[in-house]
Length: 271
Ligand SMILES: NC(=O)C1=CN([C@@H]2O[C@H](COP(=O)(O)OP(=O)(O)OC[C@H]3O[C@@H](n4cnc5c(N)ncnc54)[C@H](OP(=O)(O)O)[C@@H]3O)[C@@H](O)[C@H]2O)C=CC1
Ligand SMILES: O=C(O)[C@@H]1CCC=N1
Image (cartoon, rainbow, N blue to C red; front, side, top):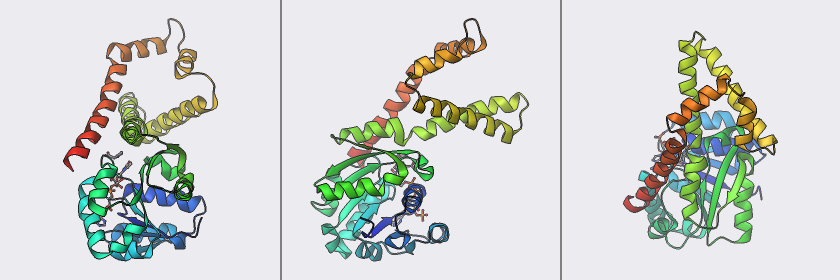
């Protein structure tokens, strides 16, 4: 499976995370290429992972067996229409798109009846602790297995039965690293006000988050049970949790996740 040539079109944050995971998992660097409209990110990717690079999307698409579309959703129509116009043979290749919002039907408008997998990774793919949602359209079993293989280094893969679930996984995992970073940022600010240095506070809070997430993954206990274990009757944690609860944390989180879904649905209609 490592013989297939995989070209990323768009070499930004998410492409870097997936490329890093592929290389770490043993995918041959000579079979990975990144194309970008500007040079700096390509230079860094070449230096870090020894992959091939190009400033031409068309050259990249012609070279590849598998084309990974990794530009922002707002750029996607232009990129796809240029591919169809200048390299129509690409229609026969397998496409993977990382873009939020855009449904399969939109790619079919721009590229024809292509074989496509919508992938929704998240940035912890960079450290092989990501979650990637995957939804296939018109793919063979081999192609599905191949896509699973190239995302295997990113962490957990979740194959979805219905395309609408991609928007749900955006809310639950794709966007979610930012929720945790935001929460940790707020904790860091308060810890600094209490006198910890910025670096001490960051290390303490990230370690606590890592410990809590590791416990949750390794334990059969629910999140609720793990929380109860920390919460002594009449103690400090109870007061902190009551404060979150009084401020409506659960409703706030549900509303934020729904806002992410609503935005993905809006993008599907407007882009
Ligand atoms: N970031 C995340 O956590 C996640 C992102 N995604 C999806 O991944 C996709 C990429 O997002 P992300 O990596 O964050 O975005 P970035 O802005 O970091 O990367 C986009 C890249 O595309 C390049 N680009 C723009 N236009 C073109 C073009 N016409 N031809 C070639 N390259 C081009 C940009 O180049 P330049 O450097 O010149 O600007 C940039 O390097 C999006 O569709 C997003 O929805 C999905 C899951 C999670
Ligand atoms: O914010 C976004 O639109 C992308 C998709 C999921 C994470 N980042």
